[in-house]
Length: 229
Ligand SMILES: Nc1ncnc2c1ncn2[C@@H]1O[C@H](COP(=O)(O)OP(=O)(O)OP(=O)(O)O)[C@@H](O)[C@H]1O
Image (cartoon, rainbow, N blue to C red; front, side, top):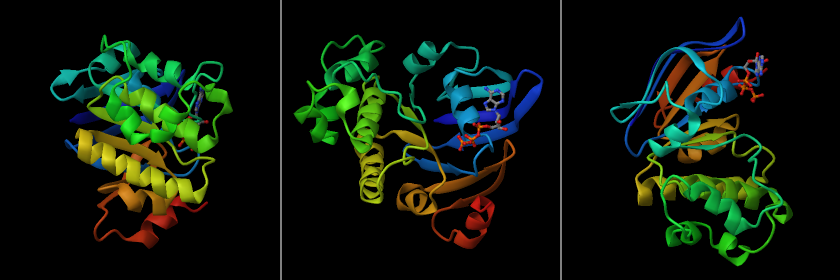
């Protein structure tokens, strides 16, 4: 459903992603893990088109998207939840979600979004900036789902979120996969969260995938060793 081949990404002369390959099957959840500065955010930004790639291909299904602008990538079926959530704090919850509707032509927030996140229905007239961190993360995911994506990418969604809410978020991502059939790529530093929901775990180091394993049978010590400083 998402296929990335030989992706190279650079900031000026400084190459950060060095020929990375990655694929997501339909309905698969993949966690990409790595220490700070290893390239997770750069990978996510290059997939959605905020940072240009210098070489390589990115496909959603059979559609090549690497030459597209970000809004075209969203229309092609890719949705992005950025690190730090980046919700619009002065806009209401409902208005935040509606910004995701622009590519679908729908005018109302689909019911299934409020079914996934009932708290957002209760708070739909509140300003986004008044929500807790966990609620803002739900809002950022709801906004991404409003574009009816095929592939959802999330950059460190657990950052700054309480452990009890992290468990709930893992369940929510599994529901999104099971009920909506999405493929999900999530960057993460917390191994327990990755193991709660991912079908497969990848480790990125210095812009390359250095280890990968299905969740079943994963060598947790080995993955932890990659993540420890
Ligand atoms: N705008 C930028 N200009 C130049 N170099 C950058 C820029 N953004 C990131 N980098 C560099 O690219 C490398 C990868 O950073 P990136 O933010 O992708 O890592 P990360 O794994 O997401 O880390 P974190 O978990 O802290 O978000 C780092 O060496 C970083 O210093």
